[in-house]
Each structure stands twice: as C-alpha cells, then as structure tokens.
Image 1 (cartoon, rainbow, N blue to C red):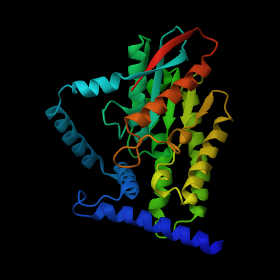
Image 2 (cartoon, helix red, strand yellow; image 1 turned 45 degrees about the vertical axis):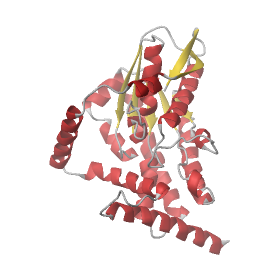
Image 3 (cartoon, rainbow, N blue to C red; image 1 turned 90 degrees about the vertical axis):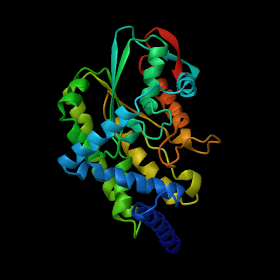
Image 4 (cartoon, helix red, strand yellow; image 1 turned 30 degrees about the vertical axis):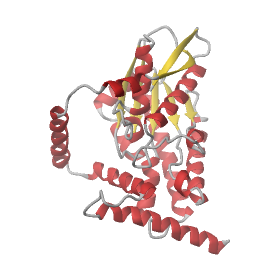
Length: 316
C-alpha cells in the first residue's frame, strides 16, 4: 500500500512538473498537454498578485488598448448561443435585488467562449430575459487565492457593493490548491494539502466574517469545487480525494452560519457525456458555466421558497 501511494505521488509529481515545464517552453503553441497545461495556466495566474504596481498598470493599459482596438459587436451566432435557454422554476421576491459575485477566475468567467462572463454573465442574461429587476456586479479576478480575496474586501468599490448586496456569490480556493501543487510538484503527497486545508478554512472563515461585518443581512453562497482532472486522470484517486476534502471543509464551514449556504458543483462535471471544459481543460466552457448557473438558480429558489413562484428561463 505504501509503495502504491509512493508510485501515485511520483505520477502526480511528474504531471505537475510537466505543467511547470510547459510554462518555460519557448513555443507554447507546439506542445499541448491537456490537463497538465491547465495546471500551468493556473500557476501562471497566481503570479499576477505578486507583480509590481507599475507592471500591473502597464499590463492593464495594454489590455485596455487591445479591447478598444477590437471593440465590435459579437456575431449573431454567439448572440444566439448567449440567448439559448432552458426552463427552470424560480422564486424571487418582488423587491429590487442586488447580487455581488466575488472570487477567482470562475467568477470572472475564464473559459467562456462567448466572453460574456461565465456563470455570472448567464445569471445576468437570465434576469434580463425575464424582466427581473435584479442587478449583478462581478468582482471576479483570475488567480485569486483566499488570502488575496480577503485583502480585496478592503477595496472601497468591493466593500460598497457588498454593503448593498442582497446576495453574495463566492468561488474561491482552487488557486489555493494549485499553489500547493506548485510548491510540492517534485514530491506530491496528501500531507501538504491537509495542512493547507486548515489554513484555507481559517481564511475562508475570515472572508465570511468580513462579509457579515460589511452586511449582516446579506445571503452568502459558497460555490464548491469540481474535479477538472477526472476526465483524463480519473485513475489517480488522490486528486479526487483532495477535491472532496476541501469541498467538505467549505460545506462544514457554511453550516456554522445562519445566512451562508454551500452549493456543490462536482456532480455537474463528473462522468458527463458532454464536453464541459474549455480548451485549457481546467475552466468550464459555456456549457459548463450554464450548468453552474442553473445550480445556483436552484439554490436561490430554495432560499426564496416563501415568495410567489415565477417561471424563468436560464440564459446561456
């Protein structure tokens, strides 16, 4: 058993090491190591917070110029895809509502080929299509870990939005897991993930407490992890065990608070016949985000079950 565990650790170490090597290749378009490429992509995102202010501003300026240069309407095909709907019953209170989404690249919408903001964008389209007076603000940021999100809650714009929010949606923690991979890629075992899990719980609790301080009455939804490696590396059980362990931590923490709910997503991506991941084999594609949006709507419905039922459609 010990030998088998060591072998598995070596396999995982090789996979993650290969992902790190991918970052150093001079021509990244010539080599495509699907799920390992995803690890490298996430690790690269984590460096964003560590750049100097000057570098970050310069990078943002370049990105802004690129957006301005290519600022033109999306094609009719993509418009049709964005407006594709499935029916779902939802309860929403009649008063105006505000939803604030915070977290990492899953909140930002990385991987959504329509470039309309992933599951958060789909929610927004859903509300618009059904003439619901619900506003949505998205503060997702690629690469964010729990410690970085906690700092961002001090940002005036983020804090002000949360103070006015009826609902706060959170995706956070995937980059915490990837940071452990990055630090232990030569010798991957369960121990460092368990150790970091304890710190993750502490930081997640600090995030929830900060949200409650900013807005005691807001309803908080913590969205769980899915396993992006299951499709290609399903035989490596340790990867699934890590995801399950961290999901259990988030679920347990949410049960400690009256106004915090946990939304699972792992089952949406497990053993699916559909292609639910983007080309990086890590983030969801539009179809994957659509399933996430529908799951979120189901939980919003449950929290408003005393209200009059409205039948709405989920935009994708």
